[in-house]
Image (cartoon, rainbow, N blue to C red; front, side):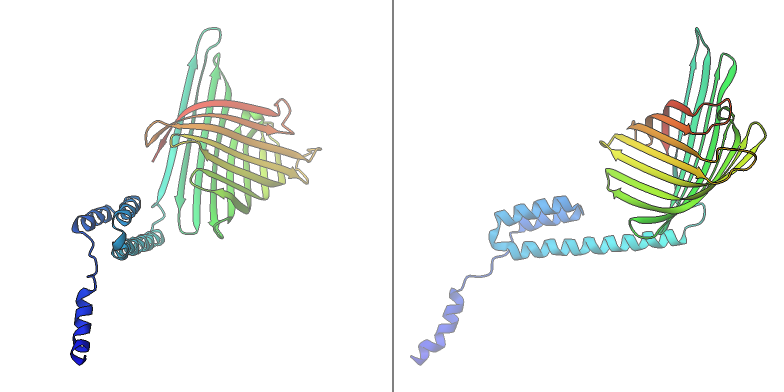
Length: 314
């Protein structure tokens, strides 16, 4: 009996089944997927391996966990390097932008030619974002210039948190056919990102503003205003994008130089549809409405323009 007891543990141990090892072809398949660093491929291969090798879940999961840990470490290192690059970037670094240009010419009962162009520059940092915009519209009909508009704006933004931001805006315009030789506006306030996804974004902003308008008559007007803005982008597909930009300025208070009606509202609305041709080149069709509830004498309240332009991103 004592001898049997001494022999029992070795016999029992020998009878126990050996731990299963992951077959080498399956391991090689998982390691090949891991080498691509593509999470989708790794997840697919791991799931197949788990289904076909139910006794090796622990080893398969260990390989998958090792990949996810390495991926997280690489992502953290890349994010840290990007943050460092942004902090050390110079004033002229990290700018991106796009240029638009369109032109037309017609003949026959009437002869007309024109050009429209825009330039947008953007610089993104850790908390700050800088936007520069400039545009030119020019048209001649039957030898007479009937549209001549120039505008430029600079808008820095400070991101308070992922949703809220503070903005400042400086803008200068010239449009003699709307009755002013120059118009300057300064504004500052707060904004909120209502939506911010890969395919859909919506941001609104509002704040006080001051505006000076130099009329073609030689008079000058100064006013305190309220600015409200909306920026909407909807990516319908990888190649088609709908955009909507709106700026509304409601003025109140006193105006200088004998303007009796001291209340005025102006609205700038731009709706566009963009179709990507290549990675750098995009075609854009846009419709612009400019409204002034109290235009100078001889000018109309509403001015519209339809433009077809090509956009080059850089």
